[in-house]
Amino acid sequence: MASPEAVTAIASANTAIKQAKANNWIWRDTESFVKKAQEAADKGDNAAAIKLASKAKEQAEDAVKQYEYEKANPRGL
Image (cartoon, rainbow, N blue to C red):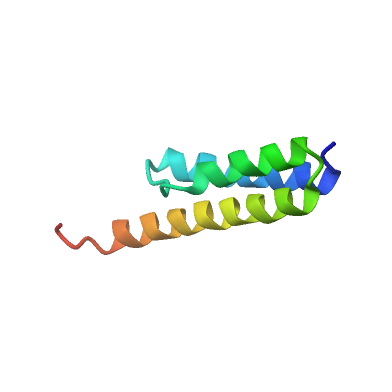
């Protein structure tokens, strides 16, 4: 069973992912990390769930930062 900490970490990751997806700027592996986090939580491996969810959240937040940077600094690609 998932611990409250794992549930919170996964929810935070999902919130960050929603923001990145709202910009249509999500990194390739981010959603797979949160999926694996949920699977780990379902198996009771809370440490792995928290670690994976944290990685997903960090990637989603970095994707948003990258989106904002690219938007502010167009390179004409």
